[in-house]
Length: 380
Ligand code: NAD
Ligand code: ZN
Image (cartoon, rainbow, N blue to C red):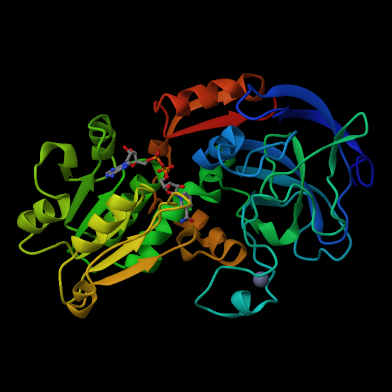
């Protein structure tokens, strides 16, 4: 048994002391896990837009000082009381939204929106006692979405950890813990394009390109990428996107452009932008009779979606999804296996790599729009 069990661990973490200010590498104290909690050695983490969004804290409740990070892979160091599904040495993916396996959502085959562990971006403490497990000289440092993976050790609720194949390379499968699974699941679990169909993807960031990867896996014959930034098109070719449309190149609405290109509309569309205009276009560009549009992007607080109800009467379907409809504990291990069987490619998403001491570089790459995913190795 490891000598750290039941003791406070001192390790390095990247602490956000204030909104929008560079993270500072600090020595933090990480308390042992309490009931239903697990202390995880984070091996590799990746930076996602959601970290940057809450670090900037423009318009949300600021919770500082805080340890961000939610896309990661790690190894269980020790477990708290009542944890039976995980043991020290198990490989895990932390997930920002959990699966308690007890609530109505967890018991429903149709939902992944757990009542107990659904994402909560305002809470900076653990559920068990309303306190943080991180501190510096006795002063608490807050958690982020229950994961806080920008620390060499983190304490996470057992319901937010997916146990994965120990043979899976953590520096690849870590990106399945948020963005890539979201886009992939939006296509495979929600849009479900039949083989040979035409799929439009709005927004070619990491989430949209994962949705394109899903369309490729499903056997779509045409994958049309829609983005306002033409730089995204080159990268998207690696993801099987076959045609591109930049709404800025056309005088008419992009849904009309797509309808002309596809004899009346695409079979499926997946919106991964967060722009409400793109959401409306993504819905209106699907074919009547059978077209399905899936919304993934997170809109602004005051946005409203406006479309003519006739579109629904004409049998266009509109859906939305949270985390690609994957149940984190039940389904993520299988997504890892898809990668292991080489059905799913992850390497092409990882454009940059840094170590923990250089974590601010990962923020720069993302803010400049240079990276799809920058992974951060936690041992240095
Ligand atoms: P990203 O910023 O890397 O990519 C978004 C892309 O959309 C950019 O290339 C941008 O140029 C393009 N775009 C913006 N407005 C557009 C418009 N009107 N028409 C066409 N293209 C447009 O972001 P990402 O990391 O890929 O995430 C995409 C979205 O998914 C975000 O809104 C994110 O918050 C959301 N998200 C949702 C979930 C969920 O569970 N539903 C989970 C993770 C992320
Ligand atoms: Zn639940």
